Length: 517
Image (cartoon, rainbow, N blue to C red; front, side, top):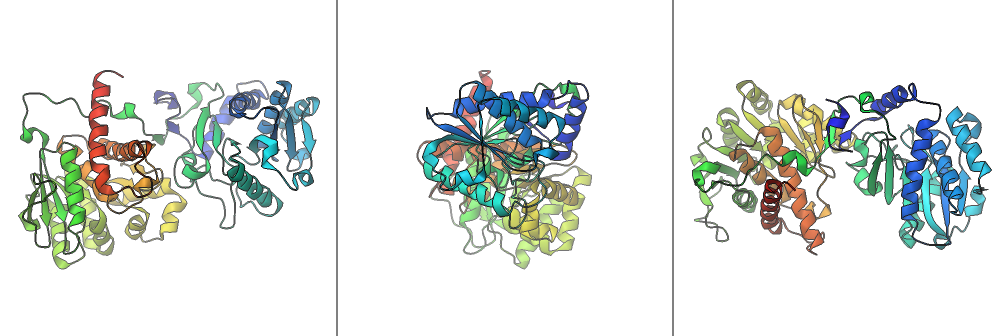
């Protein structure tokens, strides 16, 4: 399968792959073709972003081919009548042939070349747009010194004056593979828009990329699909899930949609499994049991349709099991988890269950062995839980979320949902999926329990392991997005408020998919 087999822009490529695609395309194209195509695409976007008339556009042109792209933009905008100022940052004698050609075109235009001293007292009111063509994907070390000061100045004025900043390919200072700022002491351009070239990059859509890249647009530069390898990752999109859950038949009953057991609820933590149970029932599970390690309540007053039980009553072998929300770390919790790992054919492992597995090698062995008997296993760690599972720091997990998700899936022979900005789903021997929905409203207690419940409900309705994980993450984020557009959050949104919104999103999605929209 080639990258073009995915929806436009969905396939993700790391830096080395982008370089290979670019080299293969350049070998079959006239010199400078790709740089001119990049400049044209960026110039067209820049024109759409220039909202202030009679104001200047400031273009920051760096030392490599990203600088060449920026100079091509300068030439095209100036030719179109835009008042352009260019700040050259770097030794132009080291430019490639293509970048030299773009430099000559820019110098032959009406663009004004300025010194960095001209930006002293830089007034954001003077500018309609700043274009970042400093470093792109080629940077390998932290930006420091004068360039760091320049970037900090641009970031400050962009925020102060709501000045749009367009990054070419990647905001300078951000790693295109990981979405993290390069270097412990580095800085990065805080772009409002990014036009990325050739192929989409994971760093634009996970970790810090979600904050630094703004609105992302892809320009493939007209490169033929034959030069794109099958991607190792892609972005989630509603199209991926359109056939997973069908409209319900009249001739069906609660038994048609499966049983889910939620296991957790140690003393003082009863809310966590109730959130997961409410989520599961709202997402269509036929029957939902909530098994408590602590004393079970007689019923859930908010949702009496949930059946509250002692956790030891769970029928692990015949139900989908979600274990971990409020489970605690007692000997009883460990024993229940061991039973679930041994007996349950469909299992979602969350929260305290993940921490128990991280501590106990015997439990890790049980997780790893599930794959051999074709048992379904979904694990839903946040970065700190993932760090415990891998025996590293959360900083190491976040430093390359793509690799971390892959390593977790390989270690545990399981489907991994690595939560966070740009949640990553990794299933064994399949491309990664980076989620495109969600917002900071989800950064609150209980939303992980809700996600685990969605996974359980989808598994109960016979959605496959990886599809259930990816669709659950997408629905979870889509509901948060819907609520924020309605004015509910992002600050103060609660996990309980999220649950009915997920139900609405799911039903709307099924209706739209059935209508062929």
